Image (tube, rainbow, N blue to C red; front, side):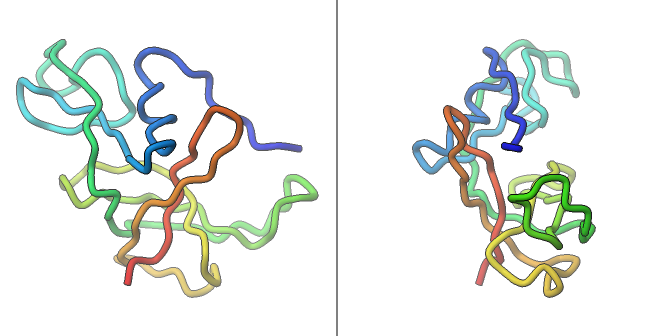
Length: 132
């Protein structure tokens, strides 16, 4: 069973396709200068319509995580890590992703991470690896 991919639209396309150029694109409000995720047409903080995707460093830290042992499909290696990643650009700028490229048992809270991308069809999934 392949990964379920997001439905692309005008608001989220930059986030899901920025990895093609090695960029993690997060929406930023030009009114209050805050980043926000998930992407949308209106800033959730100040209600400005002056928002656009902006490249960020792709660096952050593991805020919380879980080790998952349920093998939902035959091609899924267990255990795997699902983590809440907080990006370095702004406190509270978080989203859920996987930590890859290491023994899942060695993931820890506050571990520095950096983005990597997995290309599936026309989507570049942002995943995270330990940052040295």
